[in-house]
Image (cartoon, rainbow, N blue to C red; front, side, top):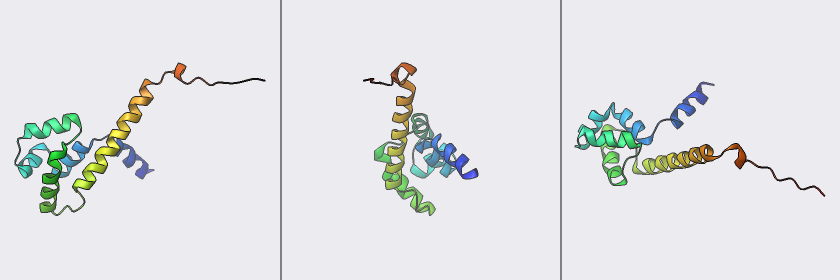
Length: 106
């Protein structure tokens, strides 16, 4: 049951939040990347990290010894996040009238 709770929590957190938390906060990540904390806050607010920043995040993670935080992981995580967002939007747009069952009687 514990693993299930962890998985559910991971679904609710954005890729940007995962990366920011990994560094210990927006200020620490900004320092590691040589950016302003306000730039990192934009990522947090949007939930995504621009593609152009992935290589520098990968390099900074490598300097920290984190070999799992790669540009490939960022791409896969962003793709999964977008699929979840699309599925959530589709679920929210369905109303009970959209779930009509068609029955044919001979």
